[in-house]
Length: 171
Image (cartoon, rainbow, N blue to C red; front, side, top):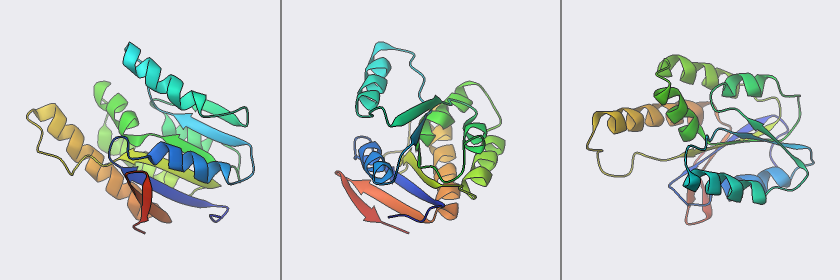
């Protein structure tokens, strides 16, 4: 069982089992559990993905939508409560599409994550193991996501790399 005030960072590729494993870790602790969702549904496929994630959570979960103010949502939570944030790369995308100051927002988030007030589980995608993207926006996203993931991993108590549904402890 994780420390009562610790940050666990789960990172991996698409469909690697990050979210499901984070849910398992969180529900291994006493409820109530809080799920902070960063996704925004702009199309039918994203609506389906969000519905699938919601279907895995029972009435013990409270869901907070925080597509942009993730630091504020985390800061407003009560102490000693299991929290799952899913996911940082969608949150980053939202900020990039809104043309916000990415470095400022990432520093603000990393600062809040460096002081978890409960068992916090944060999910992100590893985007740096593929080919170099062919356009400037995609390269900017990949680079920003890599920097954000490094910031979060640096302040995390535990880092798990998810591969084919299996957690590999990195830190």
